[in-house]
Length: 155
Image (cartoon, rainbow, N blue to C red; front, top):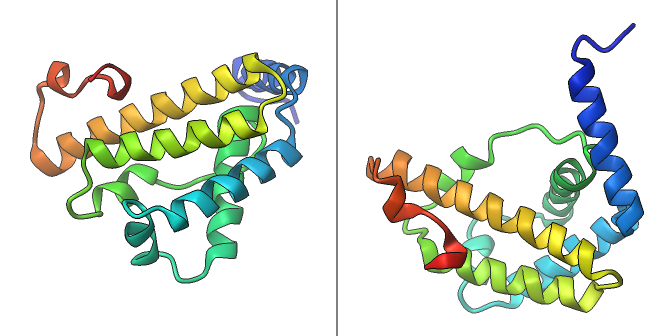
């Protein structure tokens, strides 16, 4: 059966080709997720937030590998609503996302084999963090002033 949305199939194919060219394969995603969440679990800021919500880490890590596989390669099979999950965390603020990005980028630098891959993955992480924070603020705080919320990497 033909794909009802050929442009979607073409976009997925291009994303996968770009990822493969940069060495962003399933093994890279496995290492990224495992090393990053080891840092998160040990972190004094983020560790307690995750510990309060995740009792069984292997399923969470598998889900995060699906998420990043979808984000980076278009092949992770992830479905879900990260916005709702993050919006339900009381007290989550911009500094939490900044800390998340610091740990994420440190992990990327440790794994780096191609600066272009590091740049691509970091840019996608920043876009996700910005989107989640904006959505949380709108959902939780009812804020519609998007200029005030804009850009974790710029504030």
